Image (cartoon, rainbow, N blue to C red):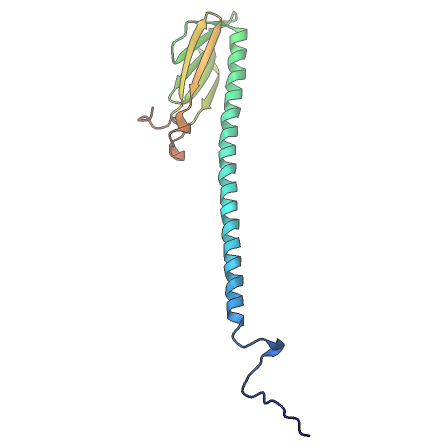
Length: 168
């Protein structure tokens, strides 16, 4: 009896039993998946950096507000409040020390002087477009009203702090 053997010359095989040319679709699938994953990682990194920048700006604003609050309360407690205008406040103490607060275009300046000589000057800088107003409801109650429209209007970062004269 004669056993016929199949000839392998009409059907080429590659190593591992796969057909030749079947590697290309697999490589394309792996490349597509890795490209999508790299894009998602890049997007997630971009969003984290944007969130970090917003957090830093909020932290700076809150730190400035805390410093203003502490200093204004200290001045109000240690000295006598003089008549108030919308942009100026003066405190005078018994030892002839005068503290002058001035608000102009998002910049709040505290100047402490004694006998016309400046002892200390501090600046508190707020984002562009911030309106600062002083007012009193009672003779002993001073209110600093801070309106920050930057939640609704975006200003360029180079001009923050009220440095451009044409801005509100």
